[in-house]
Amino acid sequence: MTLKARTPSRREPLTDTQLLVTITVCIFLVMYVAAMLIWGGGFLRPQKVFDLLNDNAYLLIIACGLTTVMICGGIDISVGGVTSLVAMSCVTHMNSGGSVFTGLLLALGIGLAFGAVMGYLIAYLEIQPFIVSLAGMFFARGMTTIISVDPVKNTNESFAALMKTKIEIPWLGYTARNGNLIPARMEIGVVAALVILVIVLILLRKTRLGRGFYALGGSQQSALMLGINVRRTRFLAHLISGLLAGIAGFVFLMHTGAGNASNAAGAEMNAIASSIIGGTLLSGGVGNVLGTFFGVMTLSTIKSIVVTSGLRDPWWQSITTGAMLCFFILLQSVVLSRRGKRKSRPRRLE
Image 1 (cartoon, rainbow, N blue to C red):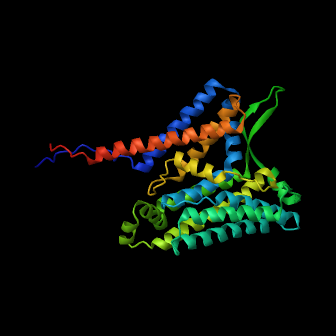
Image 2: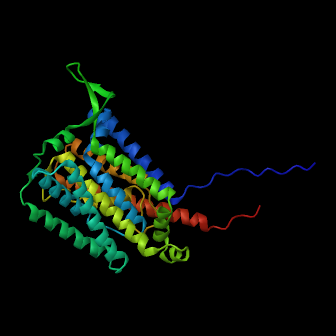
Image 3: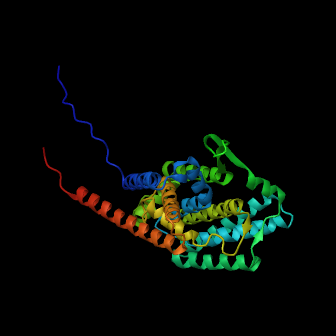
């Protein structure tokens, strides 16, 4: 009878994506707890979290689409312009007698059209993504202005009823000074954003297309050797980004109730910042929409803290956003470089 020597079980180390997501989650939790302890007030109520989600549901949808493009090693800065165009087009269409359903179809159609055109130019004609998406941003903003220079408020009763529909969660509410219980409220757009988050998460982690996104972002040459259709994969990434930008425009309209030429101004930059804060690398191959979710929450929490602290001028939000973005980029580079050095060290022979 021979006894086999037991080998100590070792936990598999975290991947780069998991490590960066973990760092983002920890920083968000520390930041939010600090806000609760220092400022208290609204940060102590669960409704504050729902308010952050209500205000940024459209941004989360945009960031999910942009994360898929960035994982492939690309970029798409047209998403904010597409969101603005969709909001203006849909509100004008529904005010002219269109239904909510046809308005949603219009939003999907505009998003798919932009995604298909830019995806074709980038993937098949091999034009630089930044140039193509920059042209798409200018075109979308210009078309929004052509539809209407002045803000257009919604007058469609069915859509107004949809806007007022909210999901109430009484056990997460709070008691007002007059003794009435005010339940926590979440907009329909938040539900749509969370559903999209789960779908994209499954797409990236469980499907062949998702694995192709990571392989393409890691190395195009390696992706070709693995038999991945590089052009089609890159095209589908931009198509998904355009589609989600169209949905985000409809969700944005559900939140604001009006179309405006300045709608979603800077949304593309906020989405890029959220993706980077969430652990997505601009060089591609690393990223996760779960991290993007916490990136959106971290960015919105920073802005809320700035306003709560009394710095209500808009440039303070820009300064803090820029500082936080630089911090996370530096943190990513330090963590990944130290991790790379550990992997490259020769192991001792026991």
